[in-house]
Length: 158
Image 1 (cartoon, rainbow, N blue to C red):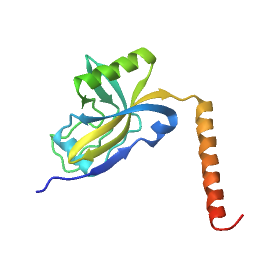
Image 2 (image 1 turned 90 degrees about the vertical axis):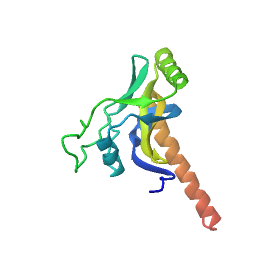
Image 3 (image 1 turned 180 degrees about the vertical axis):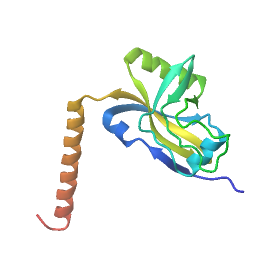
Image 4 (image 1 turned 120 degrees about the vertical axis):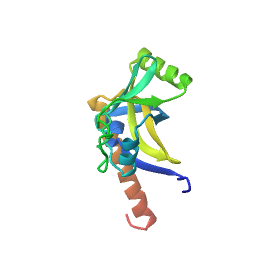
């Protein structure tokens, strides 16, 4: 069987970009069990309450919900178990340093398959205040109105 190519998104955390200002992103592998991979390939996962945290010099993903595999037997996995992220030592040290020194957090942004391997995109994020969210919404609305006006002008309408 030929190897998969490209990127197939399984789950994305759109609310994270609304609630946090993403400063940097890192792609990390996941240590998964067989039934977890089969469940992900079926397109079933949720990043809603997920977050990453450092423990004993490693980074773990908490709260990621991968439902049990429908055709699994006694070998099925626990849906919300803690999963280890597979990163280089330099990346781990850099992320741990950033989270400790400046109060940043690690938020999963997307879960996908890249060339057949399960990957998670982790964002180094700072929480937004409510006024920051309002400013972002106002800026997005203004940009949308500008693009509409430019479209009308291009068509010869006022």
